[in-house]
Length: 138
Image (cartoon, rainbow, N blue to C red; front, side, top):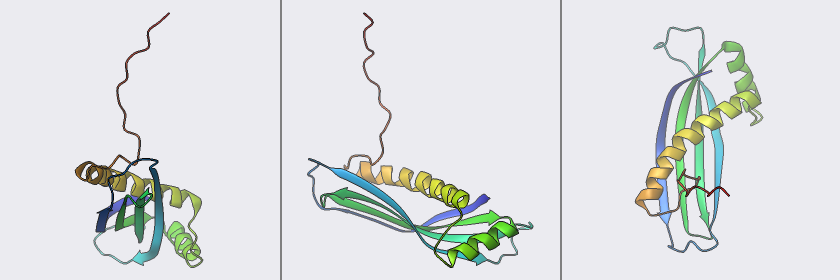
């Protein structure tokens, strides 16, 4: 499976409050649709599948919310494409494909979310590496 394209179709951020006391941050990924794509642009035996997704970050209790919608186009082997589309009829996705898709969405969306969080003065939804004083040896 190869990533051919990734793009956002909607980005929405709403900050309702500056209160960060007892802040709880939750994230979620929803796959909205999976379809086969016919294209003559790629000379390959693989088939193209487009995945529509939604990635959300909620700052609870009603502090802020971020929502990203987008598409990713994957190049997959014909047998795998058939299996993906077959399982999607029941709103299921093969485990290995689901994990790969979620990792792509998470990586791309988290980078964009961190940028928005900085711009809107929100705490990051994932831990950011930081330096700490070195512990003294006894």
